[in-house]
Amino acid sequence: MSIRTWKTCPLGTTVAYNASMKFPFLALVAVAALGTCAVASLGACTAKGVNGGLEPDAMEADAGTPKLVVNPPDVSTFWSSVPITGHGPANATLIYTTPGGGQFTANLNSSGDFCVDVILQKNTVNTIKFEAVNSAGVYTAASFIDIRQQGDPPGTDPNPEPNVGYTNIASGATIRDLSVVVEEGSVSALVDGDSTGIVSLRNTISEPDWLVIELNERIPIEQIHLETSNDCPLEALKILLNDNAQSGDPIIDEWFGESYGDGWIMVANVTGNVAAEQTLEPAVGDPLARRLAIEFLSTDCGPLVGGGRHKITEIEVWGRGEDVPDDTPTNNAPSCTSL
Image 1 (cartoon, rainbow, N blue to C red):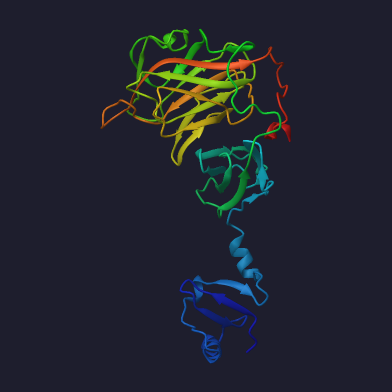
Image 2: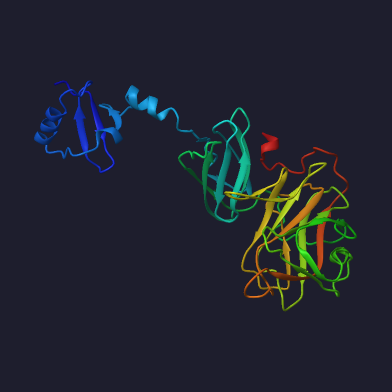
């Protein structure tokens, strides 16, 4: 008998067989003579060639499995976000998980090519997991990449403060949309420049919970400043920005989890906050945006059982400089749009 292939089976056993497998008992004897256990369900095995490569029959069986290729980026960067490219199944859904931002999705087009801007945690190694699921619900194998974020880009002010030359582009802005319930006050008081009044918001029964502010100007955003009552700080939230001329809801609740609406990107992720005031800097340097969304992720001063409740006194969005023409980059940070 001429042995050409090894079959590796689910129980970890290995069976040698010839092309026709007319005499499998001879194969078992041959393998047993070599000291290898040969008890297996041959129909469930995957074939490997003698040099480790897939045999033609295994290649045919493998053809129906969706593939995902992630192009490795630089292993280290001082930028707070990096674009990551790759190729997956056509018209599938890309799912990627980051250490600080949770799980995100992106729709792959008919080519399967993708580029996503991934926000990194500062001064640490970020492990990002990628996988894709096709229209039949079949997942690709997961791919993992590691990127170390270290330091700040050249010329970065580590502690910028709103001052002369900065504008609160949320002052008097329109609260365009919200999925939370206003229990006390008016949403216009969130952006009226007066932090003495309290606006009480309650989460709905179904998640997600968010509000959208239509910003007054399209200029580079430096800081987002949030003020709440002392007895009810915002413990966990995300800040999202959108620069499209038109946009829908920022958060979409789907069967495999939440995803962002078209054009929305997350620029800040807060967990474990206990302060009544917090100033956040966008993870993507000086982004341009036409609107800002806040997603409420904690119950704050809500009941122990049921939806959360939030008491906000003021929301400020500080930008700098003159109006920037459409599609003009404000820095040299790498992104999908700059590739």
